[in-house]
Length: 152
Image (cartoon, rainbow, N blue to C red; front, side, top):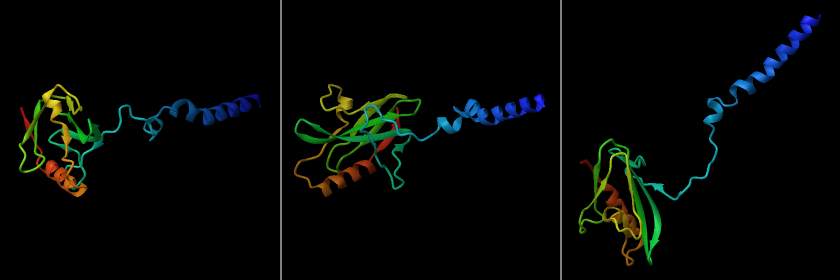
């Protein structure tokens, strides 16, 4: 009788403790979708095509609104996932010159309002104050359609 009592206690312990002891840190827990704050957030993916993808030829495109001086602007961040450096070309309007930004291999370049780096300064997009929201939207659509990424 004593053996069967011990066996019941052991069975009880295994049934109730096994999930806690061996699965508490399993894939189900580690992959849980818990909302965590992102440090330095504000960067939003830029939709480059009808599928809302923000990646073109291994380069990820992000933007966020900013105010540089008194001018409303968009800052752009380029993240190169390639093992080689790339050159990103874009144009804000057909009448404006093409801009070229170099992005190092597996690196990134981020637009900053008051940057001494000419490469990063090109990623501060300032739209004319006399343009309507609709005109600015069209300029942004043209810009995203004009992007060309090439290997250096």
